[in-house]
Length: 66
Length: 365
Image 1 (tube, rainbow over the protein chains, first blue to last red):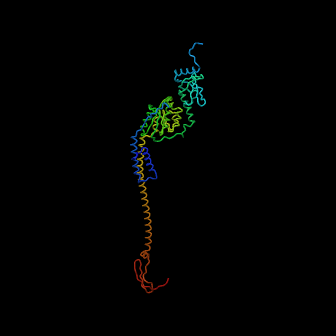
Image 2 (cartoon, rainbow over the protein chains, first blue to last red):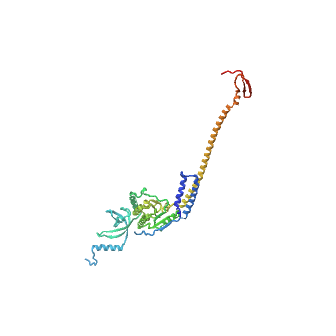
Image 3 (tube, rainbow over the protein chains, first blue to last red):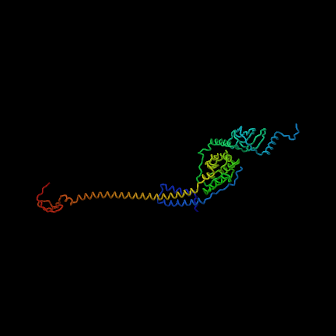
């Protein structure tokens, strides 16, 4: 089973795509596909970030005594 | 001698006095001005508290001293009154704090100077916080307004964050020790949180005094986990936030520093993708301009070559024309056909006529 990418991984992937456009590896033939990938990633990042909730837990340990 | 039924040895008297004191004043809270402050053998601290009419000796062990003290400071001590075996009465100090704005400020300045001299505020000690942490620890009172603001802002700004909260007091005498225990607890975990946040909302100088406690400041400075401290309002500066890796002006500001704004990230992600679209269009434009330029250059080159060839052709045409016998005849010359021998008939062709002639004489040139 393929592990779902985290938002962080998707953000890194988007940064890599942006960097590719600035790099000597840039090729017009591949650029359109990369652009579509970036668009899909941006959509997914929005979806992921909108639904993510923080998990806040108060630790059970008491700190009023040693 | 009076007939007194209670006859005691000195030791018994001291013990009974202490028992009575303990019963009457399990703890006494006394406020006075410090005089004759001294530290003996690097272990014991003694000073006197005085007011206009009375003086009382105070005693504690050095490790209990939570901030530098100087003669002239006004202190409130929580202490057990004791009569020792040498007959000296003193207050065994359990806790103390400066009282009044002047003394609070003095205590703060003394400790600040001490920690600064040790390099605890040095910029090179400061560690960077991860841009997007996934697991953080928070020390605060879960009932405090500052904590509630902090949680509200991180929930608005970000998601997917695991937050472990240590509920402690954030003001009053027990607060520093509770926060120190919480710092040690998080630092002892097998998997350390990525950031340790300490937050507390605004309050008076006295309310925030817990954050000017020397052992707490040292515990923050020694934390293996990078620290972010947001205490009070923007104008409040505590030693806890000075030794922290990152100081936040308020608990809200701590939340803003801790996590990015998801709306900003979403906007930025779309913006980045959009900018790539522009780059594709731009690249296509550049390619087409370049291709057009290359084609134009090729056409120019072909034209140049053709021109060269036409020029050459014209020259050749001229040369050829000059060699055309018709043109030679037109210039007045004539062709002679036949054998040039005495009596022979030859044909003479000019531009316009052909004549026959007899050879009457032949001589060598």
